[in-house]
Length: 233
Picture: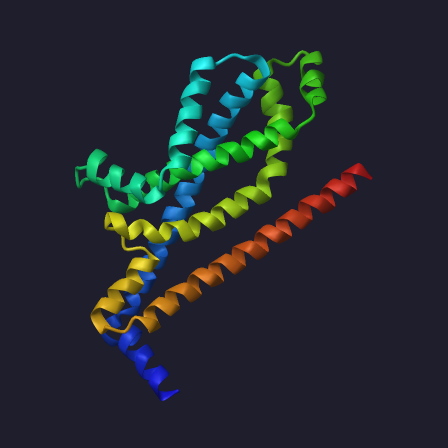
């Protein structure tokens, strides 16, 4: 116990080293939150373009671009994408590393979210679209008022899981000079030469976050199923 207290004191109390963890945690959550928003918005746009092409054979060029985008993003490591953004595209240091990480993770997440949304949109019965058109709604209005709300309920648990995955993926943000949670623990390790204590602390925080949001996603899924059974009843 005494050794544990000494390790905690050296790694977190001395020289206020716990602030590395606090700052890293804050940056991790900021990156995850805004990257999730970008991923959902961009992913929904891509999914709508691809679904529209599947249903109507329109937007052929846009669909081809989206297909290439998804193939490239999903086929290359996210750390390489971040490094290209940081070292090749945003070479000006007027753009912060946190902002670059938000853009990078958001663009990466969008490729996966697009397929989540697309599967949700395609799961809605064709009759729903036909019913909307028979009521005089345009294709876009039918998608907006009938198809998308139903699809969103279907994919919501998967979107929550994507958020959880994104939290853990941000652990590589240190490659582009971002002091995220993992980098904060690594800085402490470099100061104290004690790898076990700070890295186990960081791993514990990631585990706690994963458990919390996983429990939230599970409860949300159960609530949606309960509401669905109630509506069907």
